[in-house]
Image (tube, rainbow, N blue to C red; front, side, top):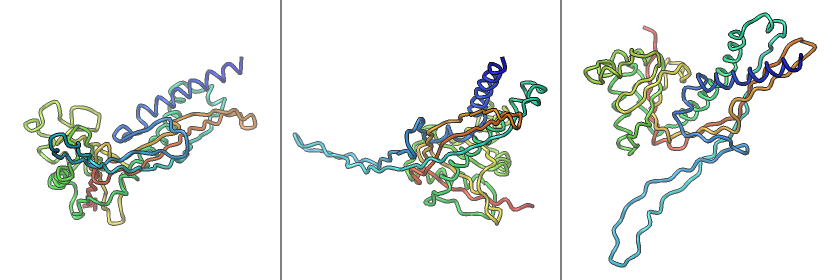
Length: 277
């Protein structure tokens, strides 16, 4: 009977961790190119250059575009998040308390996933809105928008902009971002608890993990989905083992993932001042 109870506990815990990771672990994984079930220690993303159309003479050969092909390798790393669950404590608690532990492990791995993606975004240096003396303004957003147009980045609903919470508050002060006369009543940022909003064909998402330097300059990122690649050899897995000497289960959540820069022409770094008033 004891073994059966342990197996039920383990299977339910594994399911809860996986569901928590899928539900709220990572905010950015679905905003970039993703490869799953990678076999090996790295993954390869294909990068293809721009083609040029040409004319041909009657009965002549069709001209080839001579596309520039290159590969981007993303190295995978293993990450772990573990904790102890005392057997007697588990008997005294209800399912909500177990879910707290499951959510904590899943969220830790989810934050690591976002950290990997943000780290890849931060390696782009070709396009930067450099005015670090002010916060996030409409002019900065329009500058990034113009850069995308000049770089022929597709306007296909797959543009994203991740900003800090200070910048999100500054966005809420831009009339075009919050006024129903410009965006319609269904697109108001106050209408839902989900902190994501479409503006200028771009999905804006607030995030607490963006880099900030010693001068209180926060780096925000305006990017296209295809500019960054995320690879996973193993999504979140949970291993639970019983330790009699501790009278507790050790819950080990783990994953193997990596992220890398594919095309920096599809990324604009927007620097924003966060100096306290």
